[in-house]
Length: 394
Image (cartoon, rainbow, N blue to C red; front, side):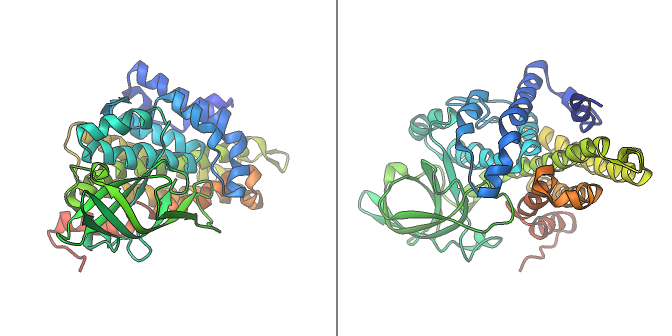
């Protein structure tokens, strides 16, 4: 079977047909970029725990930063295309998908949804061109799932500016981003506010977290803020409470669900290729019944998750997506992803743990996708509250 046929097979229900010709062509360009520019080098960078920054100009040429946002250099495409792009990026490598999700989703999303017109004009065009890279600082060392209940990072008004103090943890792109969106609690009003802190600002330092077992090519930083002075013009003017922060997270959670589908697809396609190439007992293992059973299980998970995400994106495009719908997609798709990458590793036997066969990278990366932007447990409780009318988070 040709590589092209294998790739098409992972879209078993031809969801791409829902896109118009122009958007489908863009999706195929993303796929080709990941296949030719990223997959040949990513294992080396994953091993070294470094992001291949030399691919950033190529990503910029694709014009996919902030895909679903309109204006200020962003293409204004559909949420469906945005999700499918996240899937294709993750199919090639989940770390690259996460990098783009942080920059084009969380950081640019914060600008599009919470910045003033002047601020959008100031920063977004350069971010869309990927001349400025963004990061999103919300999670803290002691605050993850409960971050909505109060941030320890503080913002104190001082004259015509603000003084920030605190720490942020697990901040993707945080050590090299040009602009870091920092969410902090106003000590006077207790409101959550957003600030754009530019790289090199005195008092802000970032150290990459070491010894990760997942998304190793994503450089996650521990950011420390010690009396960091930020001018009022760098405060996101339309961010006035955690509800505004949540608007950004709601927008990007669907993209994480799509990324989980992509991680599953990547592992499945490598496993399918291996099954056709690997010979045991005188014939390809793809001809064995138990191997075909694993492949069909994987494809079923991929197809059901993709169909769920597809409908979620349609609701998002119609302005009807709810928090609980996004949470169900994220929770379901990441559970199915974990199963799928495990079956891909199982199909390969001992070879599945060798990085040269790629699947081991997806197995490890799936663990991070499973947890970030809302754990399965928290997303489950969001959905549970919606269907029972009873909140279980105390």
